[in-house]
Length: 525
Image (cartoon, rainbow, N blue to C red; front, side):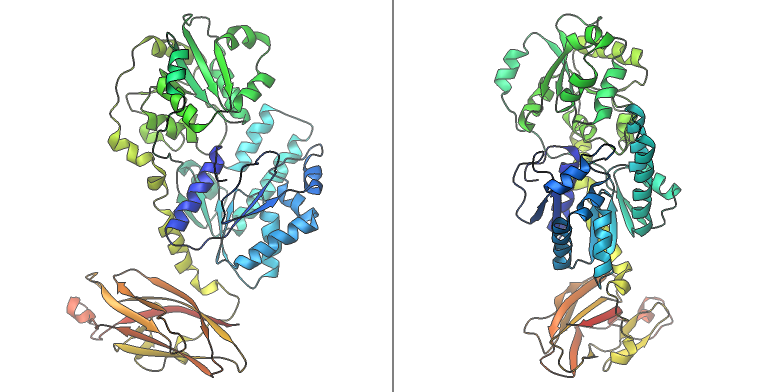
């Protein structure tokens, strides 16, 4: 979304921005329902709107709009074929799934393509666990079937995935306990630098003379049930000038499930429900609040609102569950943790009565920014790509010794082919009539001191170098399409400014080494 509002949308946007800023070419496919998400999306996103047939299927009794989305898309030939065409056009080496919902469609694509992309499951929750909790909160005759379908789906994705990106170590550990054996990155939720205010003067005047707390939540059942459960003892003890401002679509849920029975007289008179408001208005309410409430007692993943509350520096009244993924902040002076409802309400009264204490935040704030929480994503993708370089296409690969002509040694025990001259050459055979040769390989150099050296990789068939830069100890990947020009071979030339001997650094190896190459693969086009 161009203007993301919900936590999942915000996280997805920052994952995309981080990957793109690091130089990874990206193609994004977004499947959504127009009546719920009508804002314009980003220009690089392929929007695929759920059609009437798909929507009708999802609206059947017992269906779940997220869980059953993939199966619903497969039932619509037009929508299915469009998404698969998008995937085929992208021809990506990494397939990153935001949530597991479209796995059924991804499987159909994988059957058709010659690619064997790296599959990354970008998890926002342990969906099996969250589903069980949600079905327990709102049981129906279909609950057992829903839980079973969710378990089947997420386990299928975990079995197929090469890697998982999780929001918390708790979620990562839960997947390992379920048998996941791939690579894992924990990238917590974060915040963007704040804060543009909206209507500050107006709301300061409106709230003048009151001591208020603020709760912000989306249309997510644990948000509403958590607030009602933690305030269950009632708010009769609050002074007349004390109340709770509630922002977000959680207000619709509270109207539906909470405004009746005992809560109607003990809780709701002290709640001011403002509904969905824009980000600047949220920032204003946070600024004017005495305390931020995080009454989370169920649900999975981590909460974006926890990061935002911490960043604000305001007093926070939360639960242990609300600080999943943010445990290292729980001992801060402005953080109050209460899991007992009676203690929670009593602490709320104290915080609204007492004057707020200033909090020094600058050092801690940096840890909460998206730029910090997503900091490992680029390296993680590079690691996965290098690790799986030998399986990115379904061809058989190339024996390095068969195409290494001038300047190369032999392949060592680690599978590396080393150049023994400042100039070394590959001669890549191609079939008569082939127009292009796609070549992919990993390369690096022997560099115990990490002193950067110039590497240049060229082909006579191309005007520009395949690679030209100063390189340290890191590995690099070249993925390039070279026109064959109707020749029998494609020549690739490696040049390095100087060689280094391991013997100069305490090794018995007396060779003078330059560039290494690993995982060379090619496919004709």
